[in-house]
Amino acid sequence: MNEIFDRIEKLCKSRNMNVTEMCKICSIPRASLTDFKMGRIKTLSASTLRKIAEYFSVSVEYLLSGDVPALDELSLKIALFGGSDGISDEMLADVKKYAQYIKERENGDKQTL
Image (cartoon, rainbow, N blue to C red; front, top):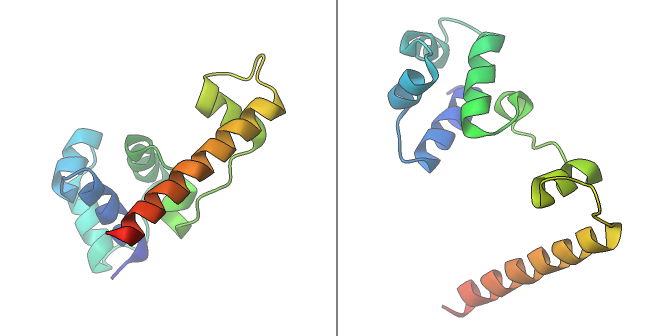
């Protein structure tokens, strides 16, 4: 099966929906995804990929390759703090440490279950 379609289907499942529902929400013809899945067409249009990526808040690059591009420090500050004004590198480092702590705590909790 098509890896791009698999990623789209996985994103749909993560929102407890199916591809048909996503197509309706994004105003994408369901037939184009069916044709793509079945190999009758070799690619989806840039417009279709953009709509899907925007709906799921992922990059088109992720849909095409499965790669998640790394955020640069400025983008990370904007995503975490809603902007970069007044946000020092030390503040960002503290947030990263806290995120690591939460991850380790959750992994530890799961290992003890």
